[in-house]
Length: 326
Image (cartoon, rainbow, N blue to C red):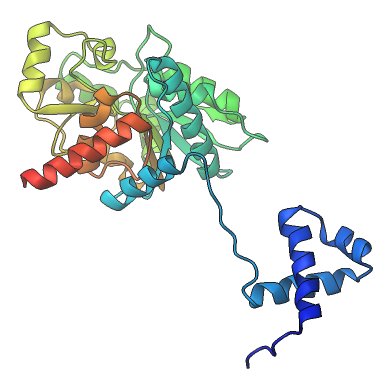
């Protein structure tokens, strides 16, 4: 049944109420007092205005271009969510800080009491941890995805696990094992030890995983903080088509774990072990991460990505280039 056409006086009254409420931000109770109406009458006038199509909400953001890039990333990949932050030209540290803050907010939106969070080390994950500021403590457990690395604070996964648990109000569970064993046999022995196996078994049940996305090309790559290699080996890795480091594993551009000897010595979960997580968040900053991100996306190893604008644009450009090449 169609609503009867209202008369001019009613339309004027509806318009007055709508302007007061939606434009000037006046509460319904205050409008009622101002116009000598009941609150229920004001509510009915607003509802009638909506039905008549008099309310059209147009939400604009000064960062609409970032929302457009986020939409393009989700549309072009298997991602469920993407967050893109502005790139601060000439200041990589500030850009990383902004990416970390956006990832921290996404993580807080994702977490629920009772969740298990599994994380890697790395500069990006460290930036996320330092930006965590929940409104109230969360009953969560934080565990590592890899063996521990002592040295720089951002490569020490146990340090980041402890720090994240402190900030969230949760409980940390640490792993007392190196990241690299001397050989595969030793790796199997370490991962079979009850204290280490229990940590990794818990990590496999994680609801949320948070991981950086590493590059193997630049000399300043965090991968070489984890595992220093000679210059010749670095060039060899690139020549083999290795494009990324993910959960400490070297990954080819096709998204597959590389057949590389050091991958066999890792005391870490396999990248595919995170597939059962409700949310897998990858965090990266800098255009040098575009190819590594593409590799990880090709492997469908993430369902959420947080990056800066220039990096996101480079990823999308590379993906379009790959499509044309095919």
